[in-house]
Figure 1 (cartoon, helix red, strand yellow):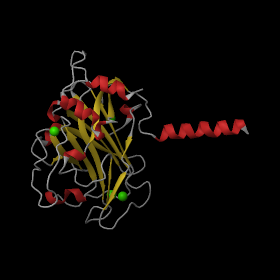
Figure 2 (cartoon, protein in one colour):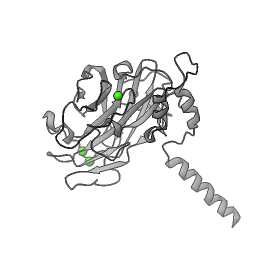
Figure 3 (cartoon, rainbow, N blue to C red):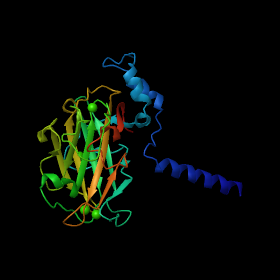
Figure 4 (cartoon, rainbow, N blue to C red):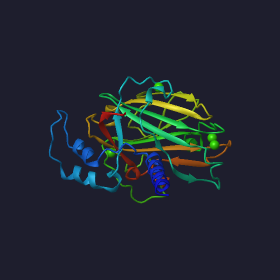
Length: 280
Ligand SMILES: [Ca+2]
Ligand SMILES: [Ca+2]
Ligand SMILES: [Ca+2]
Ligand SMILES: [Ca+2]
């Protein structure tokens, strides 16, 4: 009986480890130490603002963005992303009285890597019906696609007095806060606010092996307002929108926030850190 108990406990521990996105158990203290390193690798003193950012709730368990071990080919394929941890988009937002058709519908995950010049992003989406309904700029959110939110300096400005009326571009979005939308079958990125141009993004979609699609993106760190040093913190959110009809969005899955107002309020973004290691 004792052997059976040990086997059960061992299996439970393995399951717990595998179900976590953060199964690479790197101490948070190490991240904080990296956050204090400057370009020369020396330790610099933290400002009060930096200290406040590190202890803010959204920064406590940042997404560790590993260095790219090899060149990333922007072809929409995941073959060059081996060993990079997935972050599953688990937060479901339902609209217009829809819910997900099944546990597999819209199932999505994202990965990120960096090198001295660029941020690389991979997103995988399962979807039974891929729809692109309209190019009406006011209705892009109704289409199947991926929304990327970046706050280059992790300032997480808080939006006041919403909703409505909404003011665009949103007053809380500063010069390094961005929302960019990517749609299958569309060859240009849709930049919501004027800080960036679509040409900043090199990207490619590919058909997913089990239905749906994958998306691979390359964008320079400088264009995002990220200095490109190990330890840099930046705000980030991923949102996958699912429409299986020709009219409206049914469901969204997000990585961090359960709010639908990320497009207006950067304080809702999660946090990522440029981590000076290669994923293994
Ligand atoms: Ca690739
Ligand atoms: Ca679907
Ligand atoms: Ca900012
Ligand atoms: Ca769909």
